[in-house]
Image 1 (tube, rainbow, N blue to C red):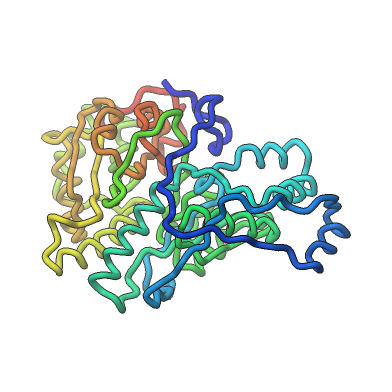
Image 2: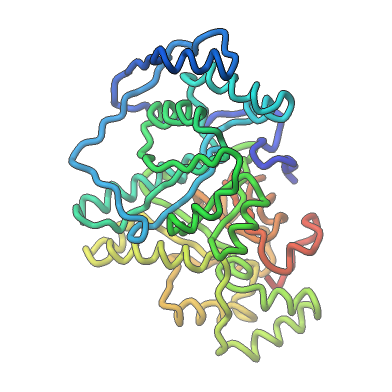
Length: 388
C-alpha cells in the first residue's frame, strides 16, 4: 500500500516527479520591477538581491473577446495553490525558517514557475470543456470558473501569476487571504467545489455546506485525457448520505443488506458532493441539446463497493429521482477500486475512506478524500466495508 504523506502536498515517496506539460504556442515575455517596489522590498522585506531574470515565462494571449462569467451563473471550482502547483520546497522554508524568510524566498524566485500539482490535469480538462462550450454557446455564462485560493501574502501573487502565464492557464480570479481562512470567500464566490491540501479547511468547508475534498499526489501518475473531463465518485458519504454505512458499521453486512432491501424505494439523502454532480450534469445537458451526447467532453462515473443485486437498486433509484445520471456505474461488491480506476483514468476520484484513496493512488489515480460521515471515526487503515 502506498504510504500517504502526513502533509498532503508531499508526494507519496521521496521522489518529486513533474507532470508533462504541453508547450504553449505563445512567445516569451519579460517583466521588470518598478523602482518603488525594489525600495519597498529592501526596506521592508530585507531583500539584498533582485529577483532572478525571467526564464521561459510565456505571455498569454486572450483572443475572441472572452468574458468572465458571473459567479452565480458559473460552475465555480476553487483550487488551492498547493494542489494546483508543487510547493513542497517553499512549504519547508515556511515551516523551518518562518514567514519572513518564506516571503523573501518567494520573491527572489518569483520568475521561476512552480511545477504542476495534482489538480493541474483537472484544471486543464476544465478549460478544454470551456473551449467546447464557448464554441456552441458564445454568449453563455454557464462555464467552469476557476478561482485560485491561497493563504499566501499578496507578494507571492506575482510568482503565481508568472506560473499561470508560463503554463498558459486561464485563471483570472484569485483569493489571497494572507493566512486567514478562505471559507467566507468561498461562499461569496458561490463555490461548487473546493480542492485543498489542508484537511482542516476542507472539513470547515463541508461544515458550511460547500463540496470539498483533500487532494493527494500519487507516486506515479496515469496519463489522462486532454479533451474529455472524467470525474469519478464513490456513493455512500460522497454522493449519498452515510445512512447505509452507519447501518453496516453498527450491525454488520447482513443487516445492511436487509436494510437496503426494505428501503429500496426510499430515497437516500444527499451527500456532500451531490451538488457538484448536479452541476456537471447541467453542463452535460448543454452538449446533449446540440446532439453531442456521444461526443460529450464530460463523463461521470459511480464507483462503489456496493453490490449491484443486493444494494445497488436503491442507489440507482435515488439518482434517477434526483434527475441525475452517471455515464457509467460500477458496483464492485467489495473488490478493490484501484484497478477499475486505472482503466477509467479519471482526472479526480472522490471517496470518503482513506483506504480507497490510497488504493487509487497506488494505481496512479489522482484521488481526493471527502472527510464526511461515520467512516471518519474509524481507523483509515482498516479493511474497507463490503457493504459500502
